[in-house]
Image (tube, rainbow, N blue to C red; front, side, top):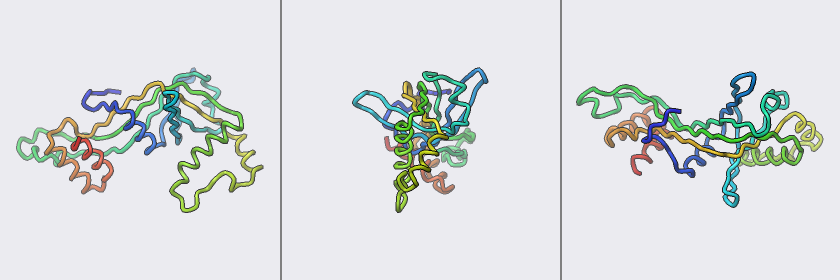
Length: 210
């Protein structure tokens, strides 16, 4: 990833926050079959007492990923936050010299780590419980595995493989108009808000205030 220093985000808390807010990511792997990509919702598990963090997810047993690469293989997981087109018309300074062109603002986190596949029932139940607790939290009546018949869940578990990736490196790129004068960055915020891109506008506003 091309990463000018001005756009590099090194604050791990901000990177973790993006992962938690945008958990649907792309898992990129390399095998003898070439490059592969899988799109999965992940759950971030932080273990500060062990100075580590882990991503967990699951795939269908019929997914060939777990037969194409071995435990311990390095993989790349890409998380994407807010993103959007930036018009040069939003820069007030454009009216003075017209020396601006369109661009794109975005937030991404690249995670490198070693993958491990899990097949035992305890691990699978743990992964599913963590994922469902997270994503059902906003429901009026959150669904839980015990809502379904136990024999049905047991049968469903046979059709999945668990994934665990211990994070070895995180690289964050938050391209949020940091390379613009404040007046132009404020213009971008206004332009995005008018386009209904409130979350991206808010992310840029935070960098203006910092």
